[in-house]
Each structure stands twice: as structure tokens, then as C-alpha cells.
Length: 360
Image (tube, rainbow, N blue to C red):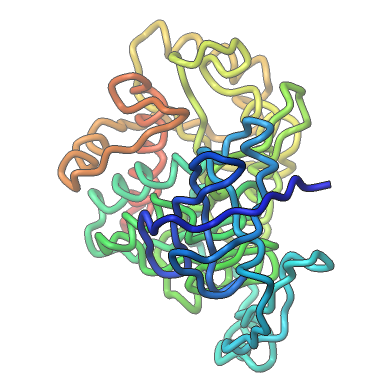
């Protein structure tokens, strides 16, 4: 059951297409809330709103935001967008979207004609915070490359929630975004990760695609209880569709949790146990002690035996982040606090862009 509270809108803290950030009065105090106006209707200062306060009550990782589920006493709303595919299916907030595959879509014929990725490099990560450094590093290597982002439904579902995606779009670093599964709000909507990848290649005309879930992740400190494990089957899908899969490793020597030291146990499980087809695993150039630690992990998990492991320099990607004036964070840590995490993302992005060289 969700926790519901009534609140009143005190102010608009900010907005961008598809989302408003609100200051609300609730339970005798002030709090932050998010309204997806195209989902629950327009909202303004002074409105009474019904809020889902569950995640904040549980102290979960939503950044301290409540979510508007109704404005006032309820409104009669009529969707103004086309589409016949439902996301959030069979929930009170199920929403219709214009799926790229559906017969009424202007891209239906393209989606019918193509079932292959034509060798397109596809970087597959496990956290949303890997998207920005991977994209910036790829653009550093191939300034004219068309880079698409495919957002899975492993974490946050509405794409407008992502500050990272907003920053990348404003700087023109992406040719478009596609939300797949129950994720929604991208430039294109797709029913599955597989059709989302096809749409990236043939509708957005992407040269390179990066796949990660949206902000947040679900973890339970168990080997299999994490949405990050989607990395394995997605890479298998890329291979099956004739793409060039590139695994982006979650690497950290700053995270205090032993299971995330070096290569995260989620990547070790996804790549060592769950993947069925060989893929490319990119490891950044690191100090010798760190390199040896990671090499032992890849050997013990059988990743080194199953896949092609490539060592690649991530430092030029870090330079690109500074050039674009981008300051990414992961788990609240910036580049100086968790350098290896960002080096890994930059190395994967750089390697993927390098694969676009016709001599490779």
C-alpha cells in the first residue's frame, strides 16, 4: 500500500519539459514534490495536491521528493497525444504512449523492415551515472558521431526526472533518447529493449548507443536481487541482433561496501554467470595494484575466459568532461572522490567511439 498525504503547493522551484519541481506544505512542514503535468494535469501555486509520500517516509533514494498523484479534487483530463500502447499497465496511473513500433507510428515500416543492428557499438552500463561520462568520452573521440541513449525500466521510469539527460540534450551530445519497457518520456517510446535498440539504429540513425537504466537502482545486498543484472541479457540481445556489445564495468575503490570494491559484484554476476554470448569488456588503465585486483576478479568470475577483455585509457574522457563543464556524480561522489568509477565509464565510451573507425 502507498502512503498518501494531502499538501498545498507553496511555490515552483523549477521546471523543464514534462516535469515541475514544487515546494509543498504537508503535515505541518515544508517538503519537495514532483509533478508530471502530462500525467496528472497542470498544477500551480495554491493548488491542493494528493501526494505519494511513501519513498521519503522510508528514506529511500528519491532525493527527498514526494510525487503528485492528483491535483485538487481531481480533474477530467483528455490525453492530447496519439498512441495505443500502455505503460505502467494495470496500475491507476497507466499511461498511453505513441510506441515507435505500433501500426499508426510513422516509423512502423522501418521497425518492420529491420531486425539487425548492423554492427553498431552498444555500451551497456548498470547505473544511470555512467551515461554522462560515457557519452562525453565518445564525443571526444568522434565529434560528429550520432549518439543515442536507451533508458531501461530498471530504476526511475519517467525520463524527464533525469538531470543528466537534460544536461546532455542541452549540450547537443545526444541525437535522441528512447524509453523502453515501462520507462516513458523519451523522444521515442519502445515496447522492449530489443525494439528500442533497433529504433536507435534505424530511426534515430545512431552510430553508437548507450544503454543504462534511469536514475536510481534496486539492490538487496544479494547476488541476484538487483536490477543492475539486466546488463547481462541486454548484452546478449545486442549480440543476437548483430551489434557490437561493450560492457561498461562499475568500478570503485571509494565505495566502502566490500561487494562493490573493484568491479561491483553485480557486474561480476551479470557478465560471469548470466551472459550466454561473448562480448567485449572494457577495463580502464589504472595503477598497478588496482589493475591486479580487478584482473583477479575477472579471472575468478570467469569473465576473462568468457569475454574479450580490453584495457583502454579513460583519461581523455575525463578531460572531455571538464571541457564540456560537466560535473557528474555517483552515490554523491564526484570525479575527485571516485576517479576510477568515471575512468571506467569514459574508457568504455572512448572504446565504443574508437570502434567506429572504419580501420577497426
